[in-house]
Image 1: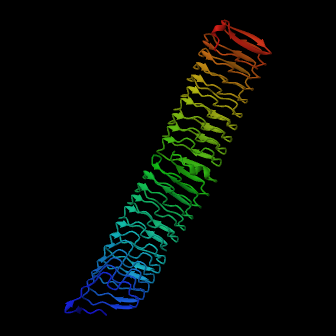
Image 2 (image 1 turned 90 degrees about the vertical axis):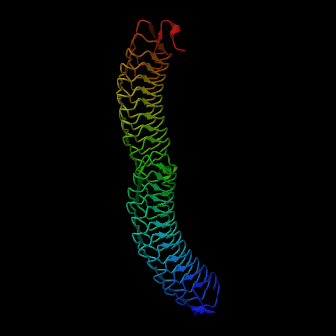
Image 3 (image 1 turned 60 degrees about the vertical axis):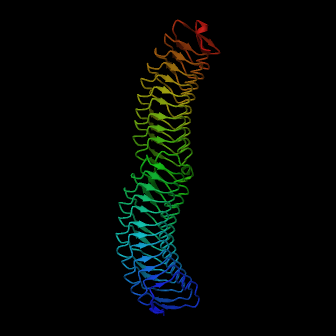
Length: 533
């Protein structure tokens, strides 16, 4: 027992480190004159089991009872308003705590590693909970926040045993690691009003099966759900403008997820290790983790997406459906290349630019609808799309790039729009299913090998608008029976009809000649100098 007076003077303070490290102290009774217990006053008193706190105590200093491992309970007076950092940290046998209503702040690490602390009553006027305040309180099963709380610090409840949590409406930021490694946490309520969820806020919450993020949230940090192995569905709302790295990393049971704002800044490896993921909503920003997904079947690009990056789904062989919204302007090179399970694609009118090889080797692709905003079909766009059987080119298309339809074995007919100006090199090369084609009276040039090896083509009429046909344009069209070339041609390439041994009729203008060599027609300008180099 500590007396009220020593040497005639009233005792009001227990000084810093006064009893620190005392290995024999088991019981302490403090007089009512005590108003403050200073820093580390009883720190490391390993045998201290009980202490009677006076009713007039106002302040408990930093680490005042740190590592008092035998202390099982302590009753705090109503007048107490200030509890220092780490005041009861590592009191591993402390079982319950009622904090007086005069306390408005729980400072950093106050109850850190109190591993048997099971029941905590927070004060009615509490505003602030500091960093790691309850970190490591693995026996703590529930916590009720008063509506006055505005701040919950970093890792405040890291590695606790809480099973559910309802965050107050007054909190705007869920700080980094706040509820990380709470492995028994199954239910979280995030209210409208929260604006930021920082790095790893719910990382390692392995029992969490679902969470709703409200439309007030603007920023989502790195790895917020990493290792939430029971999480099955989660979406980042349209209101979020920044999404960090690895948000859903190693969510092993996640099946449906996404980022609903296509214009948000997106981090890397969002879906790394999400082995069960089948349906996603994403922006067009490239993410290498998509290639590793083994069950992904449906990909929707979020509203607000304007560009789909190159190689976006390159080699994703399980994707069967891609949904592209109005507003997407450009699609990058190889964006869907090698999506061998993709069966159909619809491009909205907003798409103005498609890079090379976008659908190359999509061997199951059957139907494609191209938007009216597209002017050019690029190099190798549908190369080796062997199942493509239904395609309508929009009126806006003016040019067909090289190798555009090479290997499209199932496409038997295609209507070229009026307004088309050029048919590029090898555009229909090796297109055996093509039996007839009408070249519109707007085309001015036909590129080298444009219709080479179209072995099903039986006739070709070149309109008056065409001024240039490059060499071997119809090379190897072995079923071609009739050819018709217009007057006014300015450029004529060599061996236009090499190997076209079935030709029986050739309608050519007066400034050209036709002769048959080895059974195929050789068409040339009479003025040999006019022939293309």
